[in-house]
Image (tube, rainbow, N blue to C red):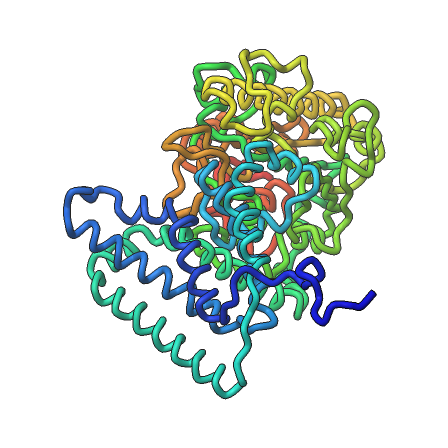
Length: 555
């Protein structure tokens, strides 16, 4: 049998549905992202404008042209015929994830939020992956990727390709400038009054945040942390100290002042703490709205009042200053790490301790932080600072933060996806988690009280940031600080001391109670801890030490 001269159609190699050069493909991607991924940006930019006003449509059109030109410029600078498809595929998937969480929880994708995302552990990531994410990914990732897979990139000779690329870059730049000039006044007003809106421009926000975090981390990795408090030394009370002195600093997670029972919340979410002789600070402002910002900031000597993220991250922390003076420091974590503040210092994670009955599927209840505390108190010598980093009320899975015995407010949201729950259910679950935090803190105080004859002890608790529970359409946390609502910036703080600790430090508890009624912030933490431990250093500023004005002269 003779063979055919040409292959049969079935034997032909399938061809891509569309042959296209790089630049038009980039333009299509920029158009798609502008229209599909920037709904929140357009909503913010057009807020307060009348839809029937022709100027509104002109402003919107100019913004759209500007966004297309911006993304085209960014892509055209790095894409070529070999990298364009992998680049667009990766950005499409990343953009689909970003828009889902931005739309669902009202978050802004700035460098702090991206840093938090990159440091998310497996257990936390699992809680954020819900079934409602799948339809969004199917529409905004799977469908575009399917179309992209059928594209065949047409190549040009390099001289021709360079000339065409240059023309496209100039054209995109011209369009961007024209759009900017056309709406300069209203756009300048928007960016001046609502700077956070730039973090809604997607995926430019993603590219900027990735570059910003990578640059900062690269600079930080290139040099050791700058030592601070080199003059730190024990204070006079150390010479007369007869018993061990232990300060337990508990860093809470996502507890907001508005729902804190000791602060006058309609529900008593802190019933056990309410029965203890402690000082609750009524008006405390956090340094940030996410853990990645707040934790390094609250352990820094200046903090928010002269905020410099690069300086904070590149310098040693309060813990290093205390250790330099001879304090025995230890960090125990039930979160995603100490964010650099305990680098080179003793630390452990409750998951590795795995206390019986308190850990499952990579997560531990906060009572695990108290594992072996009795033994450590019994063996305590000298002056010690123990930091316990709680999981607290970390969302969105509030119902996973407490055991069934604390599910007192019902109905409570029992889903990882808050959009499946009513606001009442969300608040109930959140308040239940606060009840459990109250229990853990009270249990810690009970252990400290039990060892009071041998150890002078104190507990200082403060949350790292607050949480939005649906107010103004916002959930979780991480809103840029300049526009963050008080639900995310106002946090609870309290201080308990044993009689022996208060006496040795010369503390006037009545004076402390009066001081607690005035405003305070995370900026006070560095100096207050040094004051409580009687560590002397030029870094210690008595004006920012919450107990300095309530200490007797004899101390």
